[in-house]
Image (tube, rainbow, N blue to C red):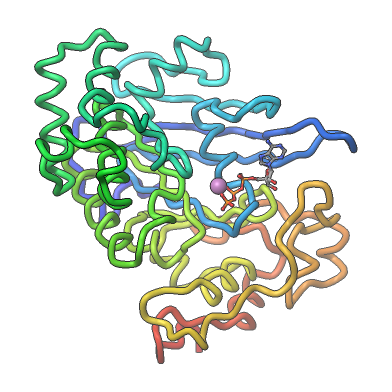
Length: 355
Ligand SMILES: Nc1ncnc2c1ncn2[C@@H]1O[C@H](COP(=O)(O)OP(=O)(O)OP(=O)(O)O)[C@@H](O)[C@H]1O
Ligand code: NI
């Protein structure tokens, strides 16, 4: 596997190999009609130092995947399978077997997560400074040293440390509070940063600038980043690798450049065609036909068959598994070649990616 592409020229002691190994991860919720499976047997290795983009439409299971990495799925949801964290030094950690206390430590010191909609997660009655101090105290860290790191992180995110630390949450704009939250999540020097829709509430310009900032900060602090979003073209600017989620399963995984040039799952291709980006004029954005997956009613066979333009009988009978079509590029489709030929998309106006 190529863990390091030209985009993540991170230098570090051990920059290769797997940092988080996800095997057969599933999330189930009890319901009146039986169990709802909202993450379905996902297996994926996250490479040390990479930026991994998790993409898919609303309700597809992206947040469930992100939360499962930290055993953070809310009750009564239940995560099964295995998630193994490989620290730079030390023994592998089986995350789904940790106690609450161990998890709390892991979530700040090893794998930090900025949850979806977390911008409002600052306590409105506390200044930003107190959030940083409280975190340091809760983890028995030296306050002076820790606040120095806070100031450094805040200025790395192009904010003024004094102004931000003295502010109350409501005094910060959306972009500022999202950046302050990223700084807070990096306070205890985690190796991995998982972000769930960190730019969703921001305007286009702020989204772009957060992407640029994350690129810088990821390199400076040698981070492995998992970036969860419905906006494929946006995350493509940052990610070394993309994993596409449809109906609670991975349907395509590969290096970003490879997916942009020759996405091989009909869903990925539709997603590339449907997602708005800064270049495509509005009239070129086409919504994906059919309705988004419902966990109570996933089609038999390939879960995408009811929306797929090239589905055959085979697809309604058998569920394709995620298989390598080239090194590093895996697709869950019986007809990857057909898909490349028949589902057209263009990333930029006038540029037909597929002839
Ligand atoms: N507490 C819950 N109980 C039952 N089902 C849930 C619960 N929370 C989420 N789900 C279901 O799990 C599925 C996956 O949800 P998830 O939040 O992972 O989607 P997502 O891809 O992150 O979507 P979005 O882009 O809207 O954030 C959805 O169909 C959702 O309805
Ligand atoms: Ni989500």
